[in-house]
Length: 118
Image (cartoon, rainbow, N blue to C red; front, side):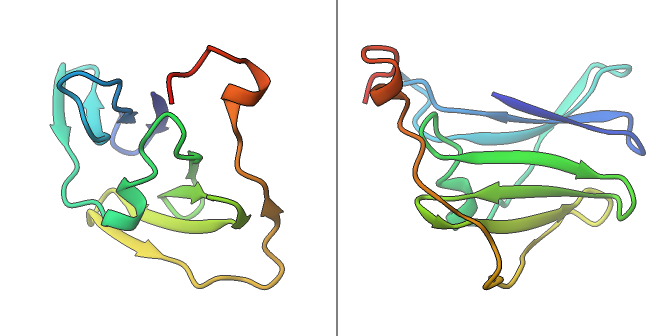
């Protein structure tokens, strides 16, 4: 589970990863703690949604200058960057940059054998 605070909306963006059982895919929610209200963000681009898994290599950050959420993913190779505008509820995949860093896939089952059921 990941969470990012959205100050203008006084809300949290929460990604819920599948854990087996009934939850087969990840979901994104906006939770307003003062009102105790939660709504699912939909639609999320399929390419991004596939990364909402325990081994999906997806992180979120909030850009307060531009009032957007930044999602970064990798499955080995160059980082892919998405933005989400909470006010307009619009996702955008940013063009790949030749200077983007390359990362190996994080494989927690190698670092911690038995910690992750793959």
